[in-house]
Amino acid sequence: MSAIDDLPPLREVIRDHQLSARKALGQNFLLDLNLTTRIARAAGPLEDATVVEIGPGPGGLTRALLALGARHVIAVEHDARALPALQMIADRYPGRLEIICTDARTFDPLPYLGATKAKIVANLPYNIATHLLIGWLSTEPWPPWYDMMVLMFQREVAERIVARENEEAYGRLGVLANWRCETKILFDISPSAFVPQPKVTSSVVRLAPRPAPEPCDRRALEQVAAAAFGQRRKMLRQSLKSLPADPARLAAAAGVDPTRRAETIPVSGFVAMARELTNSRGEARS
Image (tube, rainbow, N blue to C red):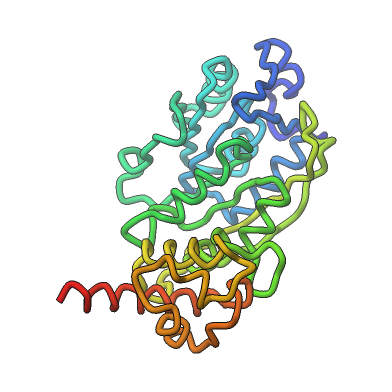
């Protein structure tokens, strides 16, 4: 493990501040500063960047972001036990680290950003990772307040995020993520890199917002995907019956046969069905 600054090693920080990881908070601390630096570098040039980090814990990734030149890091930490360790980092990098002690699920970054676009870089707590991602992908208006997300997930979740049609992991999350972002798994991290060791491999995923996704109503897209994948082994003509529109009409709008199943439909097909669902609702109201 190479030093990135003159602060104490993370194992020392954890010992001195008694930061035993709590399962209830989804905590698994990444102690290898080489790996935290690799994650930080994956977000692209950080000089003059504003970064939102969720769940910094003892601050390994926080230190890497600051050492690589991030102008402003907004660290959102729910566990008050970690605050003294993070304050030590703030003292080492005066004026560049802002520590917010709150639940990330209710945190609104906009008052802290002004007109500045941010990057979201985080080793997300496993138990709220998907919830947070869906919230960021559902941001309105679009383009969002961030211009890049580099996030760590369990490998299984990462595969769902980047999955496309005809892949086993393809589902509602893949439709939403790939509609609004370009997605890519960058690299995996072994369980042995964490304290405590999780039972699964982790993956770092980059999501770059598309400036102009194919136009459709996001809520309609989510409804179509939920209906289709809610009964993923059934044909569209059956799985889409829960929607207030003729399944055959929705399938025709996507240019697909209604006997096809959800996992064979590309993101563009779901977008077309969402637009048709919106149109059919407008006709019903008129």
